Amino acid sequence: MGKTAVVPGSFDPVTLGHLDIIKRAAVIFDDLYIVVLNNSSKNPLFSSEERVRLIEAVTADIPNVKVETFQGLLVDYAREVNAHAVVRGLRAVSDFEYEMQITSMNRVLSEQLETVFMMTNNQYSFLSSSIVKEVAKYGGDISELVPETVRKALTLKFDQQ
Ligand code: PNS
Image 1 (cartoon, rainbow, N blue to C red):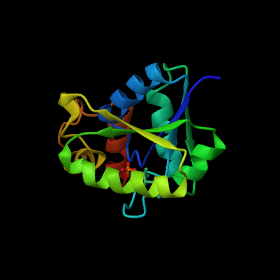
Image 2: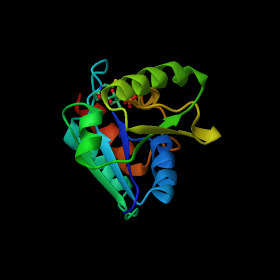
Image 3: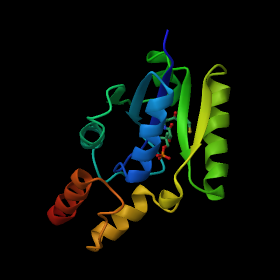
Image 4: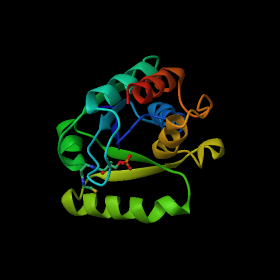
């Protein structure tokens, strides 16, 4: 049986940093589920369905990737898709405490679920969805930070507001 991993996140919206992790994880695992989850400390700009559609668009050329959304705990989703591991990207030391907290909580909830961390490429170490939204909101150039489909979606979203 092949190895399955879940890449969870808010993906509001997906950035080139996320895409870098997804592409590299897709080489290591046989099946990769990208799941858009709810982070209760964030107020998303895009709906879950919009976020799923954007990720689907930018991962269309990766055959072993499936994109879904899930209302609930990551461990329950991971159980549902029989995942062997969760993959998270690490940018800087500042991510560590937050990731440690999530991973430890998930370990309490599901002892068997392993979390694997991948360091983002240096060029994306400063990148986050929040910073992209901030720049896009005020008309800054984000073309080096997100795929073109996402750039267009952000422009449209802020034009509508
Ligand atoms: O991209 P993010 O916002 O850093 O991702 C965080 C996310 C969505 C993976 C995390 O908030 C999450 O797993 N949410 C689902 C609810 C859950 O399982 N909570 C318990 C672990 S904190």
